[in-house]
Image 1 (cartoon, one colour):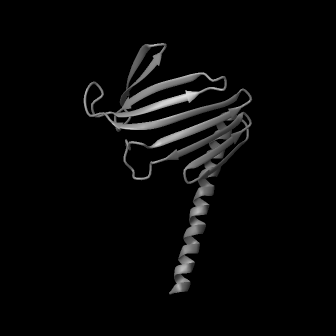
Image 2: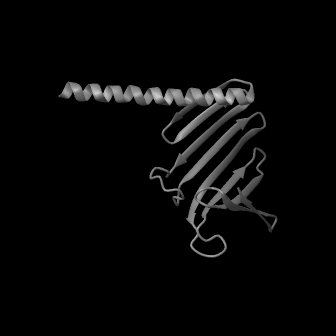
Image 3: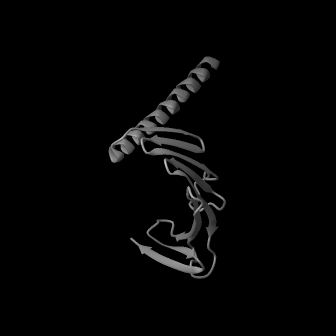
Length: 150
C-alpha cells in the first residue's frame, strides 16, 4: 500500500510539473508570436517572471485562492524593467460596493509609478461578468469618469 501511495504521489508530481511546463511553453510561444522576439516565462505559486528582448516583467499576486470574484484584499503587483527603468503597478481589490452609484460592482484600485517617479491612480468598478463598469481618474484634482458596456 505504501508503494502504491508513493507511486501515486510521484505520478501526480510529474503531472503537475508537466502541466506547468506546458503552460509556460504556450505563453512563451504566444508572446514570441506577438512580439516577433524571444521570450522566457517562469512561474511559481504567487509569482510569474517574463523576460523578452524588450525587458523583464515580474508579477506577484496574493489572496486570490478561494474563487470569489471580488475578494477583498486580493492583489496583484507587477514590475516591468526596460531600458528606460522600472515601472511598478499594483491592483488591489477593495471589495463589493454596498450602496450608491456603483452598488453591486467590484471596486479595484490601480496604482502605478513610472521610471521617472510619475504616479497614476485609477479606480475601477465592474460587474461580475465584466460586461459593464466604470473607471475614474483624479488628475490634479479633476475627476475623469468613463463607462463601458460590451
